[in-house]
Image 1 (spheres, rainbow, N blue to C red):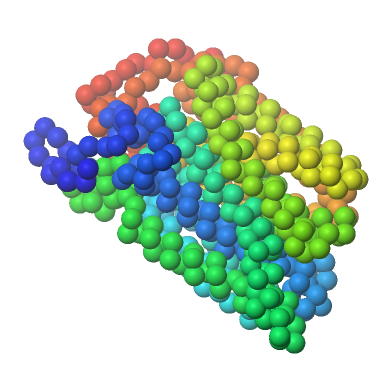
Image 2: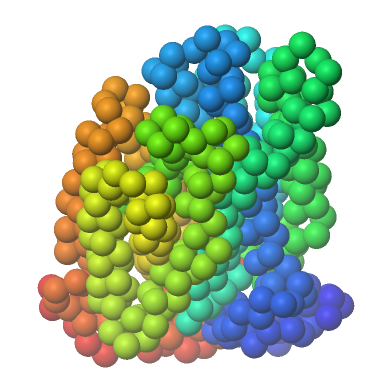
Length: 491
């Protein structure tokens, strides 16, 4: 129901008088449940717009990936030039992820989501104008800005869902968004590219004509979806940020202060490194998989794209599985449970990368890739099961910094694939991932247990906490409820 409740004595203003999901008033009316078949405002509408927007962003971001072998042939590019464009494509979003986090804390997810998605659609539509290695790299740099919408995706879910389900919500939104990487490989490389070749079959070079025009489709879809996010969604359970500030429900947020708080927290950077070793791996595989199966196993462009898409299709459930396992472990062991699940996923991911590098048959390589992908994306889900707890008031900035870690990892691993043979690049990547899993032992979040020591504090939040409160914000002593910390941290 969308009738507004005006501010008055005894109650605060909020846009909706009732919700279609069970909410927790002590967590700023965040949802305590996820109804996947519901599109009701504000919680479930935001959920579906969140993952849908990131899905479309991936569609724009990697629309060119399955076409790279054709572009390489048309323009006479080298392997190094192709990989340079791929590195630039994932590197372009790093700075934007740092910027988007504080913007989300200040303006909410909806407005930055619309701006970035619409902007990235424009260079995607201009793919057909590429005529050299330099123009390919510049184009992919600007298209890569679309990948920074991951920050809005995760922030929006964290803003709408309570701590009981926030890990699952974040994982499903991120995972179904990442699914765009697999769908893009299949749709662009195995469906639209052959279709456009058929459309231009009477031209001098149907393949070239096809790759120069086919990217207009994801561009149009991306721009339209960006506009839809602005008009169809809500920033928070109680309404949009401008409305909440106007009615005095939400205080003005300093983007700079938010970023400083997130950047000065050592846990942010430990998760930055670990996210580089899961999402960074996925981005690298989105660029490498089709080329790898074509070069190493002699597959055609269409079949290599279809095989590569399997890696991305695992996002349908794998990242959500990681988030769900994180929430369940949290229910039994608190933060220690989340850290254990996170560490195991990273460790198994690294081992499977090394196994994949040593697999010589096509069939077995595909099977190993499926399990490798499973743990890559599960680790992404467990990462963002932890992020909302690091420093709740700065969740947007922390989500942005950690998210930037994924792209930083993709740049580093991409450099490995650019300069090394496939086998050596995979071995290096797997070894780094295994080492990163050890860093979980150094993560210590105030008020929560660490991997090897400490206990979780028992806290409650004040009823009707201000918009912008985080997952476990402790109220001031003069607020409606105040609960003393029951146990000291021994770590």
